[in-house]
Amino acid sequence: MAPFKRQALRATTPRALRNVLASRSRQGIMIGHQDDPFYGTTWKFEEGRSDMLEAVGVRPLVLGCELGGLELGWDHNIDGVPFTTMFKEIQRQVARGGIVTLSWHPHNPVTGGDAWDAKGNAVTAILPGGAQNKKFKEWLGTVANFLKSLKTAQGQTIPVIFRPWHEMNGGWFWWGKTDCTPSEYKQLFQYTVNTFAELGVRNLLYCYSPNVADQDETVENYMKYYPGDEYVSMLGTDIYAWSPEKYVHQVKTTLDVVKKVAQQHHKLMCFSETGYQNTPKANWFYDSLWTTIRNYPLSYVLLWRNAWDKPKENFGPVPGSAAAENFKKILADKRCLK
Ligand code: BMA
Image 1 (cartoon, rainbow, N blue to C red):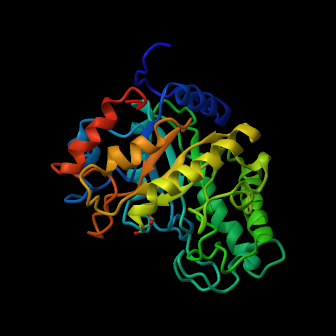
Image 2 (cartoon, helix red, strand yellow; image 1 turned 90 degrees about the vertical axis):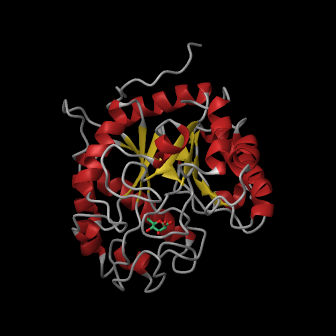
């Protein structure tokens, strides 16, 4: 197989994107970083910059962007990123041969609080027949317009990975386990996919991404909220090193399950979110993260954001740090696509 080379993404449909991801995942794993071109640990909104580029010499092959706030008609997302800037950076990302994945932390449609306001039986309220269904449909319409607008400078459709309603098996989001049942959750996911289809959104590959399980992951537990094969193209998992001593075990046991399900259901797999807050162990990126995941058939691993607004929220390599030096060992590995 010819060595991997970054070339402008030519895929214009989800199916073509799926083929690109499948073929790349046979060659190796892509590295992703949330919000990479927007801000870093010591800067924000300076065009051309990237913590990852400055720390380890390459831009991430996968760019994660956040849509929260779009549903309310804001011109910037919940982390202060203007949607016009996001649009431009998405174009640049695919022109460089990169991939885009979108997360969405929408506000609570019942209480008006943020995504973490897990109250008000919001999922029941937004499904058909519920008191907030009309409002939710409008929200989906606003988000659909942004998704449909994603085109290259030459006017070609940009297909992206969309990863809505993530970490549903945790108790912190209004679509999570404390405030909705698995059956309601599945309806929410299906309703989102169907409504976007009705609204003419044709550029999404959907990703399902539960949070790490309380006990060792099992197929049954992982699939508890699964909306069905027709609604999902990619299987992910979000695991942070909140308990660093457990991390490697958690990642292995979970990825074993994700791999099994992905093979059985013919889906792509990714490590949809990870990181060790502020990476206090200099060898963590290579010794804990990379050596654990490198032999899985992962499409990519996405490190969460290096937040400009929250000093503790630092998950990618930071320029000049010992952890960034260690990160370079990942890039030197043949299993890493660069
Ligand atoms: C969370 C945190 C928040 C952020 C949100 C959306 O995990 O990083 O600070 O607002 O993601 O990006």
